Image (tube, rainbow, N blue to C red; front, side, top):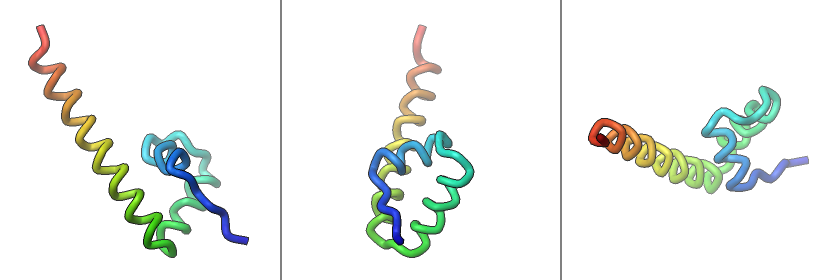
Length: 62
């Protein structure tokens, strides 16, 4: 049976908030599911932009 992962699951995975077992399942699904890969890339990009914004803001804040 194929498990369906939600956007929330991917966000938790990106932030390392999933169990080892769940991370393995998501990694396996990412290898097989092109649309899941695209969603992952998109969410990872958003996280990267937010991280950069936080770094910029903290270094320029008083």
